[in-house]
Image 1 (cartoon, rainbow, N blue to C red):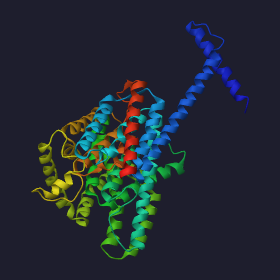
Image 2: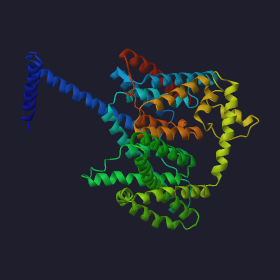
Image 3: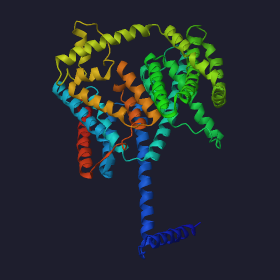
Image 4: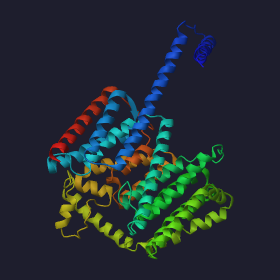
Length: 494
């Protein structure tokens, strides 16, 4: 095939000459060489983008497994090196600038109260602006590839969680809410919810059935994620999933009209109900009967249904009334979840008391807050109930209480900007679900969860402005120095 490249070069040169003739420009002898050099440059840029895609995917995997105090600075230094080498970019300044200011205010609050910036969430959240900056070097095709890679990773974490659940039941004879690579149940839940909406946004078109094995693999991811989500028994994640579906319905209604939106959301709701029902039935079968061996026939049943999930989806598409009926059964699933975990109602009321307690501390010190990581200690000795958690279950109130009003306002600006931008349908759904969960739980402060949202749902080049190379390199240099200092401080003092 060595003869192909010369022929392609001649073809490009011929077309370029014809184009110049038609436009009235004289072709230069070196035009063919220019075209070839442009092609090589384009190929080199594409290879660089691919490397960034795989780097960001590796960052997601690493931070999912560990967000340790030695890991964050190392990852941050690598990302700073990428930004320093790449230079000029286009980024949405209404998100990027408030994100930087948010980090400045949180680090300042940590320094004022502790004499360093290694306390609380500020240490880990320094990764956000540099991650957002590196993400801006990718085009739409690269972002789609990155999202698909992240979906495969989320599916793997779901499978790992299922394997862990069966191991605990069959080997250790213990039935507990599902944990996994991500962490506890209230971390796995929002992680899977965000992954699920990203998955919906990357679903292959119905008409494309040429690769049946690939299509089957992609379809089978859905029941696995939903079953695993159900086993977390995370009520906040269940409601966040509903909020994301409502966001899809509202956006589709504006775009496609009421009728098409109702049928789609009923079909989606039916799939969600069946997937969640698998997990709840599996939990009940071993948790309430005491017969742990029942998990084996349940696992076989779920596996068989997963094999025919694509046919089930087509059944819902052809029998719309059945889709409505199954979707309506979601009310029964909600009641079942409350019965399995009756403490959820009391927990929700306790979180409201926690938020009221946090508002009191915002008023006490609005400039720098009470300091990173200090709220729990103060709550232990104040007049209110002691909640025995390290974060207030509301990202705005906790940020205001520990780092001050300025940081809270920057966080609010980023949130508003995310929702007024013209975002892809399912990206808006994942942002809505994450926002709701962060308003009633601590998803925002579990670094691996906002990192997944940032990589899969944010669109840095939408509404973007150019940032010059000198500015990018100065920022990357400053952040790299901060990461190096944090790493040195951790290694020397802990």
